Image (cartoon, rainbow over all chains, first blue to last red; front, side):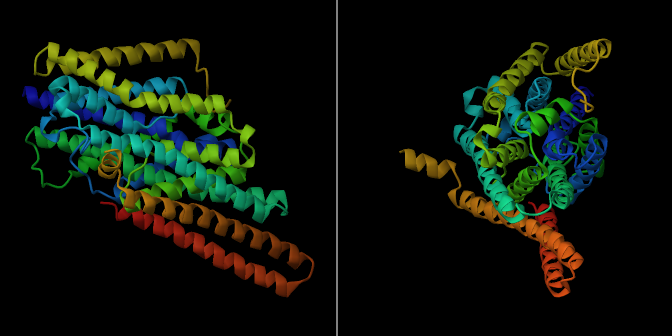
Length: 366
Length: 84
């Protein structure tokens, strides 16, 4: 009974993480389209939400592992997972508050690493896995997207430079709708699966599933729904950063950033070298701006974003580890996760009430 | 020691494949889309000027480039569905 209660809390927390993942990463898909007016804000987030939902069903090759090759899988239990999820959710909300795009996947890995570290000590974490699967991709993704988008925008300007601006702008707006759609599908496919993996692992750990059982359909539908709802809510602060605070972009730059980002993500998926959507699109936006004019990029904003990327793993690990430590103060039962959950829900409710009282500082309309 | 560590940590073959595939896909597809856009714009302008043959040639270019972009989109979806 108590294990079922922990399972229910972990499933609910995993879906909450999925929601923040969609909410946080909406900007990757829609920011450039909104800033170039290729799509109206509400239409853009609705479009992204639908394609995120569809994307979640495109591939169901869910690995029932979290942070595979990074933490010792045998040491993971539902309390460790709970700590990891809280670490990831917290870091997603912190970076959203400051309008900084950061990787939800890296936040989840960081949270689980911190939680596992506190639970079992340094032997639970594999340094090489952390370096190869988190640190190296975090450097490769933005650098490669920067390069590809930079070359792409130079090629585009060379080809369309003498054409009538009106038809070119309309054409690239259509291109942005297509490339944004590909990004939304890829995001739904990659990121909803992480939540499916977390829930599936929790069910296996609790004895509700065997390791070789397929992922239950309700898990797929609930993960797809949570990420789509989060996407539809739209993390407007990050959308504003990605869409207009890094560079003031034209439609060709928006298309180059999105098209290059989609190509890099799909290439990495195809080859089996997973890269973060957030890192990739951010690099693409910077590359499309810098290739036109180095000073077009607001490097101060870009620096803050890179700082957030560097802090993601340790910060989520710190929160994940602290959460695990607090839950263990109440033993190995459901009391710890329940108390932490109630505290977090109360904190979110207080923040919501405060926001309603003071109004939203940054909205889509701005 | 550093070389051995780098070899064990980084999958260099996969990384190189990502590099060339990203460059080919990213630059290639955006260039072909721009070609379609250029062809469509030129075709309209030339037709307005009464240069039907040239306009038709640009229209064909637009169709081929457009079909290539659609094929790239379909390939992208296939990559997602084939993920393991």
